[in-house]
Image (cartoon, rainbow, N blue to C red):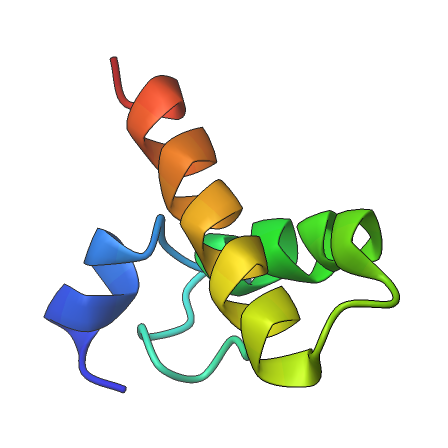
Length: 65
């Protein structure tokens, strides 16, 4: 993932000092989505994933206000 996409996704979830974007692993968006996923346990997998990322996007938008 390129640096612009990582920044748009909230940056790295667990940043390392001095590391370049792309070497840290999951983004903050991925981290939020992973935690939101538990809200939709029992739903179809594809629906759960879409809902989790929609929640993560809403959390990032609120965070950036």
